[in-house]
Length: 260
Image 1 (spheres, rainbow, N blue to C red):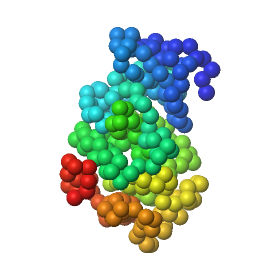
Image 2: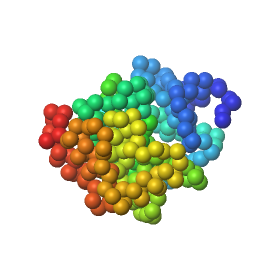
Image 3: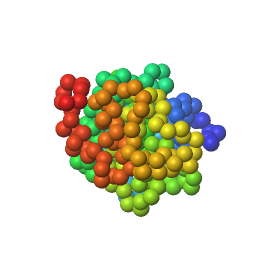
Image 4: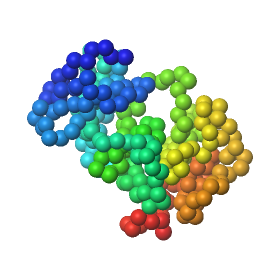
């Protein structure tokens, strides 16, 4: 998409467009240097052909300091693009799972850290866009939620599929945070098995899975520790009102890396 690989200077930040870290349908991520803090690793996420929306509360985002949330530093407009300077991480959850699925203990640790970050999003009233393994970043073995509070920067793409989405994303105009419980359940399932609970080729497969669990409650048939099985089955439920709530998840955990 970008032929010009020359660096971009924005304030103290130099975006190195010859050092691509990752890319998606909506944006590219590049390595970045802060001339006043060369010891701290930064990266720059560039959203193409857009401007900073009036609804974007970036001052609120900058002031968030939670180790389980990706840190945002600055935002700039450059030509017809928007650039967000962010904390640079080591990898994402998908990278880790590709090497080796999570153990039961690892799964609980992921959930505990997610809940820590997610509670802050609730407290400051920020949304979370598309929860999936690739959007949970990892730095020094700490999980960090990304893509929060910036939904307004993403353009609606017709036909875009989201394998970890909740059913109400398809069927309801208005969704609540309970949609994230369903997605989180799928993320944890994927982490443990390195696959989704259904074969995903297109949205057709996803809809078929939704219809299946609407008529018959989702049940894990594979080998899995009982506590983890019950946990995932309480999250991957078609009816949002029947899913376990965030508060209930928090109550289930003590500080000893296990479910009570």
